[in-house]
Length: 195
Image (cartoon, rainbow, N blue to C red; front, top):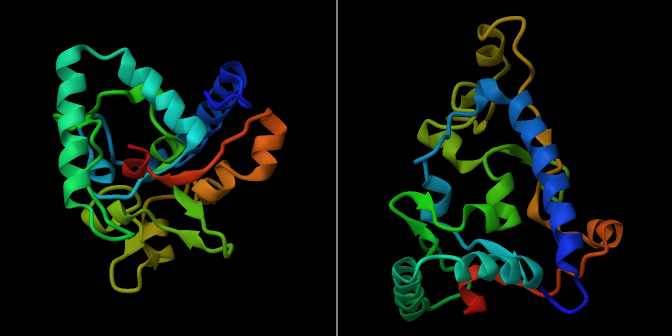
Protein backbone atom coordinates (compact mmCIF):
# COMPACT_ATOMS: atom_id res chain seq x y z
CA UNK A 1 0.00 0.00 0.00
CA UNK A 2 1.06 3.60 -0.40
CA UNK A 3 3.19 4.76 2.51
CA UNK A 4 0.41 6.97 3.92
CA UNK A 5 -2.16 4.16 3.83
CA UNK A 6 -1.82 1.35 6.30
CA UNK A 7 -3.00 -1.99 4.86
CA UNK A 8 -4.99 -2.60 8.04
CA UNK A 9 -6.93 0.66 7.55
CA UNK A 10 -7.66 -0.19 3.93
CA UNK A 11 -8.84 -3.70 4.90
CA UNK A 12 -11.12 -2.20 7.57
CA UNK A 13 -12.67 0.01 4.92
CA UNK A 14 -13.11 -2.89 2.49
CA UNK A 15 -14.74 -5.00 5.24
CA UNK A 16 -17.09 -2.11 6.06
CA UNK A 17 -17.85 -1.51 2.37
CA UNK A 18 -18.48 -5.20 1.69
CA UNK A 19 -20.94 -5.35 4.59
CA UNK A 20 -22.81 -2.22 3.43
CA UNK A 21 -22.92 -3.41 -0.18
CA UNK A 22 -24.12 -6.88 0.85
CA UNK A 23 -27.06 -5.19 2.61
CA UNK A 24 -27.84 -3.06 -0.43
CA UNK A 25 -27.66 -6.06 -2.78
CA UNK A 26 -29.86 -8.08 -0.40
CA UNK A 27 -32.43 -5.26 -0.27
CA UNK A 28 -32.44 -5.07 -4.06
CA UNK A 29 -32.34 -8.85 -4.64
CA UNK A 30 -35.61 -8.88 -6.67
CA UNK A 31 -33.75 -6.79 -9.27
CA UNK A 32 -30.29 -8.39 -9.20
CA UNK A 33 -29.78 -11.05 -11.85
CA UNK A 34 -26.00 -11.18 -12.18
CA UNK A 35 -24.27 -14.18 -10.65
CA UNK A 36 -20.98 -16.07 -10.86
CA UNK A 37 -19.99 -16.36 -14.50
CA UNK A 38 -21.78 -13.14 -15.49
CA UNK A 39 -18.97 -10.81 -16.47
CA UNK A 40 -20.57 -8.12 -18.65
CA UNK A 41 -19.27 -5.38 -16.34
CA UNK A 42 -15.73 -6.80 -16.67
CA UNK A 43 -15.78 -7.11 -20.46
CA UNK A 44 -15.93 -3.48 -21.52
CA UNK A 45 -14.90 -0.64 -19.25
CA UNK A 46 -12.21 1.75 -18.05
CA UNK A 47 -12.19 0.53 -14.43
CA UNK A 48 -11.11 3.50 -12.30
CA UNK A 49 -8.56 2.55 -9.64
CA UNK A 50 -6.85 4.61 -6.99
CA UNK A 51 -3.22 4.02 -6.05
CA UNK A 52 -4.33 2.29 -2.83
CA UNK A 53 -6.68 -0.04 -4.72
CA UNK A 54 -4.04 -0.82 -7.31
CA UNK A 55 -1.48 -1.67 -4.64
CA UNK A 56 -3.99 -4.01 -2.99
CA UNK A 57 -4.84 -5.57 -6.37
CA UNK A 58 -1.16 -6.28 -6.96
CA UNK A 59 -0.96 -8.15 -3.65
CA UNK A 60 -3.64 -10.44 -5.07
CA UNK A 61 -1.76 -10.71 -8.37
CA UNK A 62 1.42 -11.76 -6.53
CA UNK A 63 -0.50 -14.65 -4.93
CA UNK A 64 -1.62 -16.11 -8.28
CA UNK A 65 0.09 -19.12 -9.84
CA UNK A 66 2.70 -18.20 -12.47
CA UNK A 67 0.53 -19.43 -15.36
CA UNK A 68 -2.29 -17.03 -14.43
CA UNK A 69 0.18 -14.19 -13.93
CA UNK A 70 1.50 -14.86 -17.44
CA UNK A 71 -2.01 -14.73 -18.96
CA UNK A 72 -2.73 -11.43 -17.19
CA UNK A 73 0.62 -9.91 -18.16
CA UNK A 74 0.04 -10.84 -21.81
CA UNK A 75 -3.47 -9.35 -21.72
CA UNK A 76 -2.08 -6.13 -20.22
CA UNK A 77 0.52 -5.87 -23.01
CA UNK A 78 -2.13 -6.46 -25.67
CA UNK A 79 -4.50 -3.84 -24.18
CA UNK A 80 -1.70 -1.29 -23.85
CA UNK A 81 -0.71 -1.81 -27.51
CA UNK A 82 -4.32 -1.14 -28.59
CA UNK A 83 -4.94 1.87 -26.32
CA UNK A 84 -4.97 5.10 -28.27
CA UNK A 85 -7.24 7.60 -26.56
CA UNK A 86 -8.62 8.71 -23.21
CA UNK A 87 -11.89 6.90 -22.57
CA UNK A 88 -10.60 3.71 -24.20
CA UNK A 89 -12.57 0.68 -22.99
CA UNK A 90 -11.33 -2.89 -22.76
CA UNK A 91 -11.84 -6.23 -21.05
CA UNK A 92 -10.33 -6.29 -17.58
CA UNK A 93 -7.00 -8.15 -17.84
CA UNK A 94 -7.76 -9.97 -14.58
CA UNK A 95 -10.85 -11.62 -16.10
CA UNK A 96 -10.01 -15.23 -16.98
CA UNK A 97 -12.71 -17.59 -18.28
CA UNK A 98 -15.43 -15.13 -17.20
CA UNK A 99 -14.20 -15.07 -13.58
CA UNK A 100 -12.16 -12.52 -11.67
CA UNK A 101 -8.76 -14.06 -10.93
CA UNK A 102 -8.18 -11.63 -8.02
CA UNK A 103 -11.73 -11.48 -6.66
CA UNK A 104 -10.86 -10.86 -3.00
CA UNK A 105 -8.46 -8.08 -4.08
CA UNK A 106 -10.70 -6.44 -6.72
CA UNK A 107 -11.30 -2.71 -6.87
CA UNK A 108 -14.07 -0.66 -5.33
CA UNK A 109 -15.85 -0.15 -8.66
CA UNK A 110 -15.93 -3.93 -9.06
CA UNK A 111 -17.51 -4.39 -5.65
CA UNK A 112 -20.27 -1.80 -6.10
CA UNK A 113 -21.25 -2.25 -9.75
CA UNK A 114 -24.69 -3.68 -10.42
CA UNK A 115 -26.69 -1.54 -8.02
CA UNK A 116 -28.51 1.61 -9.05
CA UNK A 117 -26.29 4.40 -7.83
CA UNK A 118 -26.56 8.12 -7.30
CA UNK A 119 -24.42 10.09 -9.71
CA UNK A 120 -22.54 13.30 -8.73
CA UNK A 121 -25.55 15.37 -9.89
CA UNK A 122 -27.79 13.51 -7.42
CA UNK A 123 -29.66 11.55 -10.09
CA UNK A 124 -30.24 7.80 -10.17
CA UNK A 125 -27.95 5.90 -12.49
CA UNK A 126 -29.17 2.54 -13.75
CA UNK A 127 -26.39 0.02 -14.47
CA UNK A 128 -25.90 -0.59 -18.20
CA UNK A 129 -26.57 -4.30 -17.73
CA UNK A 130 -30.25 -3.44 -17.14
CA UNK A 131 -30.53 -2.86 -20.88
CA UNK A 132 -28.98 -6.27 -21.54
CA UNK A 133 -31.51 -8.29 -19.54
CA UNK A 134 -29.72 -8.25 -16.20
CA UNK A 135 -29.96 -6.07 -13.07
CA UNK A 136 -33.15 -3.98 -12.88
CA UNK A 137 -34.23 -5.22 -16.33
CA UNK A 138 -37.54 -6.34 -14.81
CA UNK A 139 -38.42 -2.74 -13.89
CA UNK A 140 -36.59 -0.58 -16.43
CA UNK A 141 -38.39 0.95 -19.40
CA UNK A 142 -36.06 0.45 -22.35
CA UNK A 143 -37.55 3.37 -24.26
CA UNK A 144 -37.40 6.04 -21.55
CA UNK A 145 -34.34 4.50 -19.83
CA UNK A 146 -35.90 4.99 -16.39
CA UNK A 147 -37.54 2.74 -13.79
CA UNK A 148 -41.15 1.99 -14.67
CA UNK A 149 -43.49 2.24 -11.69
CA UNK A 150 -45.99 0.19 -13.66
CA UNK A 151 -43.52 -2.69 -13.98
CA UNK A 152 -42.58 -2.34 -10.31
CA UNK A 153 -46.21 -2.54 -9.15
CA UNK A 154 -46.73 -5.71 -11.19
CA UNK A 155 -44.10 -7.46 -9.06
CA UNK A 156 -46.38 -7.44 -6.01
CA UNK A 157 -46.88 -5.64 -2.73
CA UNK A 158 -44.09 -7.20 -0.68
CA UNK A 159 -41.28 -6.34 -3.08
CA UNK A 160 -38.99 -3.50 -1.91
CA UNK A 161 -38.77 -0.45 -4.15
CA UNK A 162 -35.98 -0.26 -6.70
CA UNK A 163 -33.62 2.20 -4.99
CA UNK A 164 -30.45 4.05 -5.88
CA UNK A 165 -27.67 4.08 -3.31
CA UNK A 166 -24.74 6.41 -2.82
CA UNK A 167 -22.35 3.86 -4.29
CA UNK A 168 -20.75 5.88 -7.06
CA UNK A 169 -16.98 5.51 -7.32
CA UNK A 170 -16.33 9.20 -6.63
CA UNK A 171 -18.25 8.99 -3.35
CA UNK A 172 -16.74 5.65 -2.26
CA UNK A 173 -13.23 7.05 -2.75
CA UNK A 174 -14.00 10.61 -1.62
CA UNK A 175 -11.88 12.72 0.72
CA UNK A 176 -14.57 12.27 3.38
CA UNK A 177 -14.29 8.47 3.22
CA UNK A 178 -10.50 8.71 3.14
CA UNK A 179 -10.50 10.89 6.26
CA UNK A 180 -12.97 8.66 8.16
CA UNK A 181 -10.97 5.50 7.43
CA UNK A 182 -7.48 7.06 7.57
CA UNK A 183 -6.84 6.10 3.94
CA UNK A 184 -4.80 7.94 1.36
CA UNK A 185 -6.37 6.69 -1.87
CA UNK A 186 -3.77 8.59 -3.88
CA UNK A 187 -4.00 9.28 -7.59
CA UNK A 188 -6.93 7.80 -9.52
CA UNK A 189 -6.80 6.65 -13.12
CA UNK A 190 -7.95 3.85 -15.42
CA UNK A 191 -6.65 0.44 -14.36
CA UNK A 192 -4.64 -0.07 -17.55
CA UNK A 193 -2.82 3.23 -16.98
CA UNK A 194 -1.25 1.86 -13.78
CA UNK A 195 0.83 -0.55 -15.85
